[in-house]
Each structure stands twice: as structure tokens, then as C-alpha cells.
Amino acid sequence: MNRPSGKILVALTGASGMLYLRGFLEVCAGVPDLELHGISSAAGVKVLRLEEGVAPAQLTGISRWFAADDFTAPPASGSSDYRAMVILPCSMGTLAAIASGLSANLIHRSADVMLKERRTVVLAVRETPLNRTHLLNMLAAHDAGAVICPPMPGFYLKPADLAESARYYAWRVLDQLGIDVPDRKRWGG
Image (cartoon, rainbow, N blue to C red):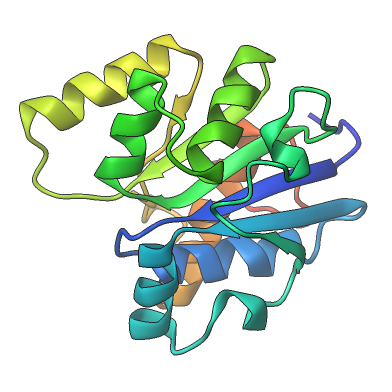
């Protein structure tokens, strides 16, 4: 913990759960020296519009966006200086691509780069129920070095509403990145 925050790549895909993305961005706003860049799949754009009523460029906290089809963007290279990547929410299609090493878009390629460079990739996989293929893909992505972190917030901190619950989940994601959040509540703290 307490490493310098650095630059994080955030990707959103076509899974439901944009409330968690909003909570993540709110929590990140309070972290000093943290810079967020983003990529959205076409399906991610649609789900964000349906669930939150905004386009990716309207999200606060992400200072630079890359097109999902731009394989010349910095995140496509191992020489980029991203410390970690968070895919929130992560669709089962994106999980499958990452698990199999397929780079059909910049999200997949960036995750592949992060894994080959031994950097942290957090996959907020969002689907229910899960079938055997989903579970095997999660295991394959885990074995490749990804952190499987479904948006399953704990309720022991007694969140007042869904937005607070999403922020609590964001704390867990940032824990996986080794980033300490000011005023973060913990069990027994």
C-alpha cells in the first residue's frame, strides 16, 4: 500500500453495472496523484447511456479517452507507463477475449499488454447466473495474472444506498491496485 498513485487505464464494456463505474470514479477523485485514462467499447457506450444517461466523455475523472479501434494508442504497447488496468464493468465477451489472448479491440490488447508486462489487471466481471464457460474463462484469466473482482460489495459497513455501496466496492478495487484511499472504512477499524 501507499505506493504513488500513477496512471490507471479504465475500460468499460457492455455489461450492466455502470453504477459501479460511477462510484469508482468518485472514489478515485479523492486519491492524490491518480490519473485515469479510458477506453469504451461500442456496447459500453450504449449501456452507459441506458444506465447513467451520459456518454463516456461526460464522465468526470477520466482525463483522456482512446478509441476502441485505435491500436496505435499508448495502451497498446508494453512501453506505456500505465501502472494498472481496471475493466469496470467487464462483459463475458471481454473476459473471454482476455482469457484466450484475443486482441479484437484496444481493451483486449491493453489487457494483454498489462498481463504480459506483469501489471495489475482487475476484471469486474458482471453476469448472473454464471455458466461453465464463464467460470473457465475466469480461471484462465486468473491464471494469466488478472484479478477477478466481481462487483459484490459487502454490507457489513452498512451502506446507506446503492451509490455508497458502489463506492465501497471501489475501495476494494483500489485495494487490489495497492492504492490507499483517504478515509477508507475497513472492517473493525
